[in-house]
Image (cartoon, rainbow, N blue to C red; front, side, top):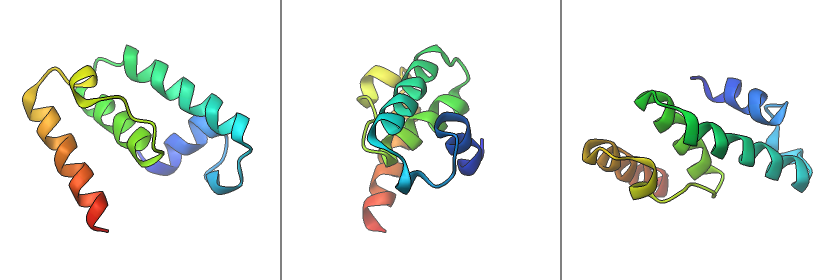
Length: 83
């Protein structure tokens, strides 16, 4: 999953800074639905990561059953906070 591809898929653009609030909310809602339906661990992580970057990620315990996935998500959160 490429970042720009996901932005295009959910928001119809790679320039999300200029999106109206309603379009942002709609794209995030579609992402959350897809996250809930996705069974592939890698894709789930990618969707959760993008939601995290957008400030709307669900809690780790809700999304990731596997402790390894939760640890990877925590590491991702720490890395983004350092930048």
